[in-house]
Length: 450
Image 1: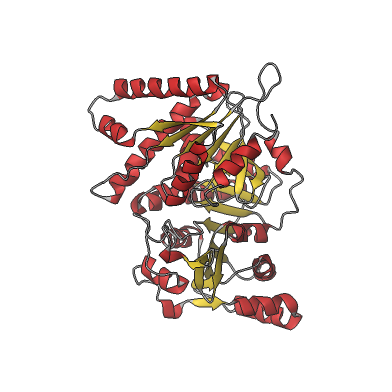
Image 2: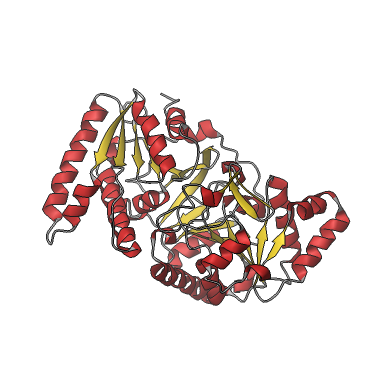
């Protein structure tokens, strides 16, 4: 049974490989994706970058395209699993998007909330979600300017994000003990099957997970009851791997690094790092990177760019800024260093969230166009930030889809395109992943084959 994943940014495929990531979901692209042998189809909806109103609109548009495709191809919506892939630190429209999928592709017997991303230190225990052992609401991600929240208790979080429509007292909980017992004992596995079989009326269920087998045994049980029950999932990346049960990737990190493009002399071209994410972790990683002697920074002045976009006729000013920044990048490549293109770190003030999000998209598109204009000189790109990466792929390179090759480090994927013009590998680096040295670490890895 194929798994259709609605990904709210382009990094949710960070535990799997060998599948298409769609940036365009018209009939032609859907047909190509469904013909591939992979059980996974990712639709890069990028709804985390949108207001709730626009996120609803885009989700409905995607569902409409899928339902029309099903009708023409003779598929039933019951023939597939559906995952709404969201952030492992609980940002995004984590309750709204599954609600729209229930309306468009339901009815479902239950919606499972499984935010554990084990490869990145995100675990859930006793219904509480943690980041490296710290309740996630106490971290910077819990204080997010757009998607902040006040609790790490998933049932209470669902109640908060649904504005009380889904009451915490009505939410069921699959505990670690229950999953451990099901993993170790056939009778307890039967009890888990019975629990799943009794779910109905789109019950909300939160799931604990600390180790891979917790998700694997749940996925096994779900497959057993899938002929009689329809489930929807709001998950981070780890459960996708468990449900798809892919064998190990035959390509290791060295194989993926070797995807770098070469010049006419058969030498690898240099790379470029772009950092658009503004979370504190991304800023810390950027600081470490800029200290390294192999790198040289190129700063996009965010305040200046905002002032330019506020002009009635801003095209000439944009071109002048582009010329300045491209000249800086050229100079850095000329001295055989790695250019690091990043947005200045000041926090912009906006009157409302939609205004903030719209400027974020403008900024990401400016960055993407800039990188496109220098791409012929590059062998690879490391793109830090989900929205940054989505806009690079969609607006910068105008890709309809990309191919997921695998991970160079846990959670850090490489994608490529079939495009003759822009076929360099791109490392998709989530804003919230790693420690302060991880960005430098992946750069050193990409440079390990000289």
